[in-house]
Image (cartoon, rainbow over all chains, first blue to last red; front, side):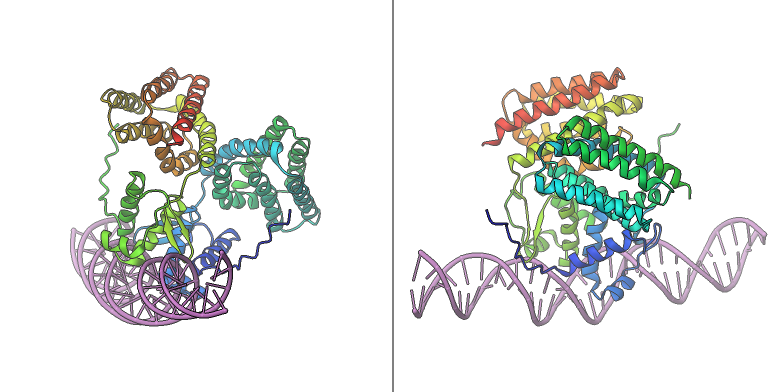
Length: 222
Length: 222
DNA sequence: CATGTCAAGATTGACAGACAATCTGGCAAT
DNA sequence: ATTGCCAGATTGTCTGTCAATCTTGACATG
């Protein structure tokens, strides 16, 4: 069986590129919550026309990465602690489920990738890296799990939360010691999945979310 | 306590109206799965410009109500049985959770509305109404539950599935006897919520989803 | 000083028109 | 039957324009 070589020329449309650029800008904190995004400014800095930009903004709005108030325009939404809590509640359900399903059906190749991603996180945490690197490696780790849970809806939903989750991760990862604890929890998830133990995987994933929530709560006041 | 009277003038933007009209058209089956939606045609029938229409299409794309293939344009996606199954799996998780939480915190007014919505469904099923009415009353019933579960993310997520769920409901409700069974299951959910029994509410909600899935599976071949 | 009013400027909402890039389907040639 | 190519249809994107709405600051009023 030949590897399905992906020769697809990646001809991205302007719209897609704008969405990606803006998403990245929001996630990396270039636009802060509460900031208004002025269309004409974005157009000139991105070098695209207003219609194209506005299409991209609608996509981001649906992702909840921005809010568009009629006649006021787009802005980066503020995240209240209650909002954050609700996100953790859903993550507990869905990531627990994803980990459990994943443990039953993940292929060896992906399992290997999961291990490597855990290792990448460990290295980043040892390097006392910027929160940025810690967040992206964590995000990768869970992305592999949800991509291999056998349910696209769960994947879609968690992907839809990713932006906000990463925002919260950036806060908690800056707490001293959180990265190490996080690594222990993630390793427990990995071990359970590797052992094909669904029950244990769910439990470990849920526990991680609970701990992450507690850490975020501490970090939230700042 | 005065009812919070909603005086907001409903000044909808063209974009919003287009989104609503198209959403309704897709849900009510005016556009069938697989159909391509030609922009210029939609523009003339809706009486809006292409930029406005395209913004609306991006919103619908994010809702997964349409797919936009680059250089081919938007089309109503086909729903495979595997897709449907995955939706039922997530509904089992989230609607179960919503029912459980709802039973703990729903206010008496909303509980009353829930009862009325159940009664509306019963009447519709006795009238041997068109599937249309059965679907919308069912949808209302569950909407009340998820709106009162105290978690906006769950509400958002289930709302995002609503289009596809209603599509499936329309299929199953046309099965003889399904409406009656459905009513029994929904009544069980209502009773448990009214009794403030979270555990029972979750169980009843999950059972309903399982039964609904079985019914949909039978109906899916047609 | 607090409050209300109003006009100017900034920004969004929406449209029309245009043109290039790309896809589709059919026809001819090999 | 496969390939090559052309015409029509459709989308991707831009520019430019205008009205509607929000924001702000100045000013007048009590």
